Image (tube, rainbow, N blue to C red; front, side):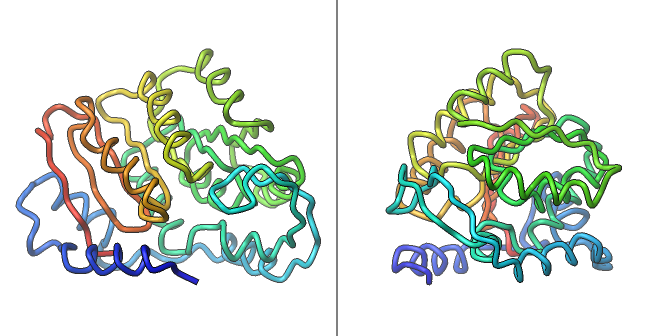
Length: 259
């Protein structure tokens, strides 16, 4: 159930959000009309959504260590696959948005922090990218591997282990990152740490997407600090996620987009 803070932040978002009729920036008008809310609406991906349906009915119980933002952080908990699917997988319209972003910009090197059950990963990979995805919970990673096996053509590398350690290790040997999707530890300090680490691997056309930017006051504070960073030249708030752009030609723009 949404918290009072989330109700308040959504109301503010609702008041501020604009559509194509209020976008004066050519870049953001094009981004909105061709990627965020294209007409006609792109077709659904039924093969991926059938996987979502299966996960939402899976009562298999997993023992996991909570490394997210909840009150049980750091504790070992028992959860069913279906309960994880209900709370951790992006809604279809956002998963499809991430798919469209990869396809529209022709991204090939994508990094995902927080694999969860792997459906978001498939949305990214089936758009044509090579996706490296990092997951801290071994049993959750095991479910994700089974999900990936249902789309054998998808190019996915899963790195298992605490992202605090696996991310810097991976980035030390990787090239520039086109897109990073961050849906891992939803707390202020880890989120800013991921941002600073990824910042070393971005280029002018890169994009960083952070999930749940209004989930808690700490996440919202992290979002505000990230979007005001000197190397961030534009940002878009879609309430559930925030998107950062690094092209100097965008000249420090921020938009709140209806979605």
